[in-house]
Every structure is written in C-alpha cells, then in structure tokens.
Image (cartoon, rainbow, N blue to C red):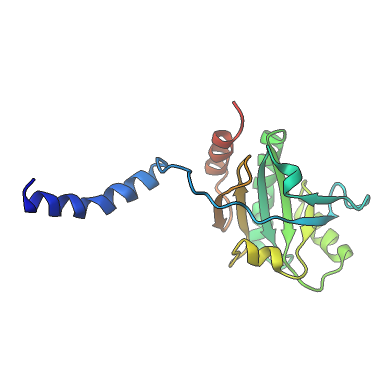
Length: 174
C-alpha cells in the first residue's frame, strides 16, 4: 500500500467510527454497569407501604430512571411521554422517578408527583449520591439501563417518545 493510501485510510477511520456510532452499529461491549441503589418509594404506588426499590431487584427488566425536580418545567413536560411509555411497555420496563431536591419532605414530593401527573413511582435522592453516581448534570435526565444492568443511555432534556420506544423495543425480550 502506498504512503498516500495509508495516510488516507488513517484519516478516514474517525469518520467511519462516527458514522457507525450514529447508525447504532457500535457494539455494546464495554457498557458501564449501572451504579447500584436501594431507596424507598416516596410517591406513587408503594409509597404508603414503605416499599424500597433496588436496582438488583430489577435485573432482567429494562429500567428507566427519570431524574426530576418540582420546579423543573421540562420535567413536568416529560411526564406524559413517560406515562405513555410505561403504559405501552409496562411489562418490559421498570420506570422510576428520582426526585433530586435535598430538604423536601415526602409530602412535598408526593404533591409535586401528583401535580405532574406521574403514573409511576418516585424515589428521593435527598443526599445527591445517586445523582452524582449517574453523572446527572441537567434536568430532566433519563437514564436507560438494559436487562443486564448496564447503562445504555443517559440523556438530558424532554425525551423523544419514538426514539425511546425504539430503544426499549430493541432492549426488550423478543
């Protein structure tokens, strides 16, 4: 191979990698394990009974973690989308809200959860450790964890319903 062809091949490699990643052709090898957690449900189904949720209990399910705050308008905008996703993929998905506000009482979180119209349970990351473990920098942030407990996607902003549905379908059992 000539020196020119070798140089061109090396120059083209980053473009090939970017195109493959954009097309979803990148292998899922090396996905990071999702940080473990076990927190009480503070709003929604299970809150009255004092139920706790751990990531380990969800193994075999696709898990969606929706990090939100009561003052966040885009968080509220996300809720109808997430409610529809849960209704459509309910048996294949565990959807959990994660309130990130330190100092809120369970009653305050329950009120915001109800006002937002969330149909799924919410946890409270009062000390911020879960938020930090997942690298959440903006709200809302949706974390998608595959059935093996690996983070597949972390995306800030209001989710795109079609894109999220396609991802869940790809990760769910046939």
